[in-house]
Each structure stands twice: as structure tokens, then as C-alpha cells.
Image (cartoon, rainbow, N blue to C red; front, side, top):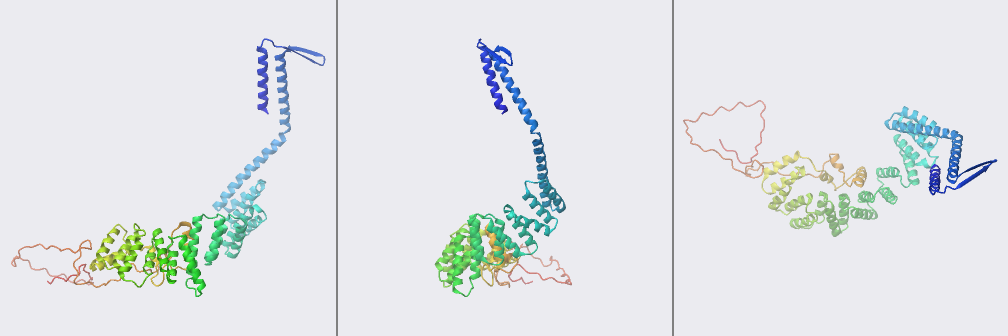
Length: 508
């Protein structure tokens, strides 16, 4: 309005100036109530313009005076809104900090001031009651939220958390189920239901939840794929030893699907290969393991690959293992597999050549045991015992603990599978329950003879190559020789000392 008035004023002023500059100012006569005024046209225009401006100013002033009560009311409302927002902010901060009494005081203050945000006030009241330890008041506040459509999801979540804190799992799952049915994006409700299904080892229900979450876009496709692979492997492990043929067939289908979804998921691949071999499908089992070795080699894979065929010579088996190692030749497990296949083929020189590639590897118990086997196969028992002694104090490899010496690989409990599903789905990594519980795994150190061999040579300072220790030569004169010193008296507690060398001691 003001801008439009200024524009009109400028236009009229320019028009008046043009009239004054043309040299013919023109004449204007005004007759009003018996009065007559004669003036130039430019002066008349300016008088009309100023009159209009004065009338506009007067009218706006009158309107401003009449709107004063509304402005005062708006100012008071804005002040209350600002105070309410401040009370809500401070209240949520107090609830987050665990100051229940302050949070409840601020929640009451916000309830008195906030007329436009009743939902936030209710949430603050519930969280303040939780922070102060008043479970009954918190439950009442969350229950009241269920009566408002826009607050039902928050009410169900609060009631679920309260029920879990009080140990009422059935009530908590009921609220999670209702929330999951009402909102397509309630990821917390989906996760609560999934945890409950995993805890009950209900892998089929877990698969349905993962598919539902993928359809609702609650989880990314890669997470859903990893979760499905782990759940299918858990289902196959559950049905593997079932007496019904239909259940065993379902176990095979589940394991094969898990291996297709995630070829690098060793538990699913090993189970699929084992079930395929039991079904006389050795070719498919071999291909499954080879594809898995390309994606992510694991020691359980080459052991399962080794045991697929039993009617073969050691050289044939070693040659078959070379085919597996060639699928991912640069990987650490492939380099270890080259050493294993040389030992299986009975070729100690090739094993020593292959193990030199592992010189930069950390001295774990598995690597020390492998070096001990190579040394013993090469006719160096003292070097082998040296590596075994080092391996007894070396750290173990978690992957090796997945192999049960009295059972099958990845023989996990239901709780272990539940943890594995969550961990592998979220990170793509395996867990190692047997390693975490310090359970006995497949022996990383070989069983070698512990007695020293008299025919073995002295070992060198590096514990590998035999060397000759030089003896200084000098002329011996019996008259100049000093009498030998008396041997020291035996101590009260003699200590047994072991020789590093296994050759015969020189006679004195």
C-alpha cells in the first residue's frame, strides 16, 4: 500500500513538473461553497496530490488506533509461545539429562503456556515421569497418546519400552506388533519383532519380517540380503538333522539359497556343500565352494572341499586343492592352502618353498603349527619343536575356532545364530562364538614326537639350518696345564636343564 502510494506520488509529481516546464502552465479554477480559487494547472495537481496523501495518512492512523487491541493480544500470544518453546526445550534437555523433578516442573509450565503444541507437552510429561522413576505416570501419559491418531506411534513405543523395562515381554511385543501394523516406516517396531523371533529361533518368521522390511524400505537391500542369507543358513542348520525327508530337503534348499545370496558367507556355503554332497551332488558342491573362495576364502571352505571326495590318492587330492587355491591366488588363505596341498602330496621341498611366502605373516598359533609340520616333514624335528613351543604362546585365529574338533564346522547354538544374523546383516562380518567362549577348536599345532632324536643335527641360531661350532686349536702341554677346578657343590634344589641340540654329548 505504501509503495503504491509512493509510485502514484512520483508519477503525479513528474507530470506536474513536465507541465511547469512546457511554458504553458495552464489554468485551474476551483469553486466550492461560494469560494473560487484560480491557479495554475501544476499547482492544482500538487494540491490534489497532497490532499490525497493527508487523507491516506489520516485513514491509516485511524486504522492503527483501532487495531491496537489486536496488536496487544498478538504480542501477548507471541510472548506465551516463546516462553512455552523455552520451557519445552529446557524440559526435554532435563529429561535427557535424567533430572526428573526439573523436567516435570517444566512440563507443567509448558502445559500452562503451550496451547498450540499439546503433543509435545504430552511427550515431555511422559519422558519427565520416566526420568523421575514414576512408571505409573509415564504409562498413563503414553496411554493417553493412543487416543490421538498423530501420537499413537509414540504412545506404542513408550509403552513397549516401559513393558520391556518391567519384564513384560508379551505386552511389549503386542505394542510393537500394533505399531508395525499402523506405520510402514516403524523400524524400531520391526527390530523389536525381529529380535523376538531370533530369540525364539523362529527363523521362518524372521525371513518373513525381513521380506516385509524390504518391501517397506525399512532396511537397505544389501542389509536385507545379508539377513536373509544368515537366516536361511540358520534354518538349514536347524533342519539338517531332522528325521523327515521333507525337512532335510528344505534344509538343502535353504542352504543353497543362502550360498547364492551371499557366496562369501562361509557358514551357508559349508552347509550347502555338505548337504549337496550327502545328496550325491559333488559337482554342485565343488562349484559352490569355488564360488565362495572367489568371494571370501575361509579355512572351513578348503576343509569342506577336501572332504568332498574320499576315494582318491593324496596327490589327486593335492591337485584338486590347487584348483581351489587358483580361484583367489593372492589371498592369504590361498597361500596357506598351497602349503597344505604340498604337505598332503608329500612334497617337503615344495612346502618349504610355499611357506616362504608367509614370512611376513604374524606368528599365530596356526602359522606356527603349519611351520612345525613343514619342518618335521623336511627332517628337522628340532626346528619343528621350536615352532611348536612358539605356537603354544601365540594368539589363535578366530576363523579357526569355527571348526569343532568333535563335530561340524559352524556348530553354533541358537543364540549364536541369532547374534550372527544381526551382526552379519548390519556389518557383513562373522562372529566367532567358540573363540569368544574360549572353547576348544580344531588343533592348530600338530601332534609330533616329543622325544629328541639322537641322529638329529645341531640347530643353528635361527632354529633352522644346522651349523658347525668351531673349536680353537692349540698345542697341549701336560706340564703347563692347570689342574681342573673342583666341581661346585650341588645345590639343594637342582634344576633340570634341556639341551637344544639332540646329538650325543661328548665324553669327558
